[in-house]
Image (cartoon, rainbow, N blue to C red; front, side, top):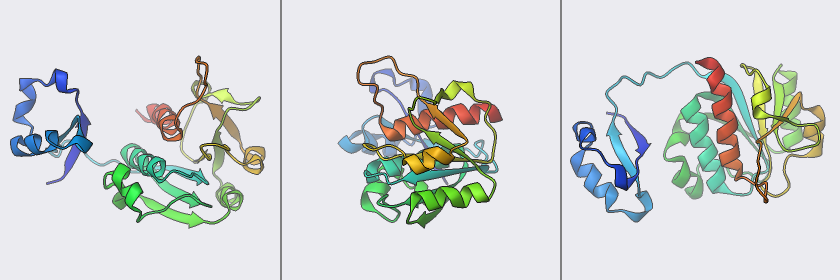
Length: 203
């Protein structure tokens, strides 16, 4: 029996949930600090696995393996086709990746190409549009596009961003609109926002 995970606030547990919760598992999970607010819910088979979307995710020298693991989890959740790791980006199997990927690394296709620019050229030559997630003087908001398949999404280094060489060959550059002082969002969170915006077009 496969399982899925759902985030639930401890203050809002409903008795109606108990018919789908594994009671013993519930007690065990709630007793573990590192699994706070994570409850295992029975998969009754209604969550059919859809065909993967023809979308590539290229990680340009990410420095945090935890961010990589979270991105892997998002890629699996939204059914994107493949992840390409480049440069110093950590690859599975890796303890820190496994901690945040929560097993999702077992269900994705991935490859490693040492140079991120060469990787971008590789996918561009295969007909993918390079979609870079970066704030620049020419970037549009993530809401400004009509998305489809055939994209290679580039996510950049947490401190340095995406390489200029890749930005220069990008077909589209998009940013997360922000209104705060720091104008800074964790790279995996930003990717999740873009990923959600893309899959909305496949409803």
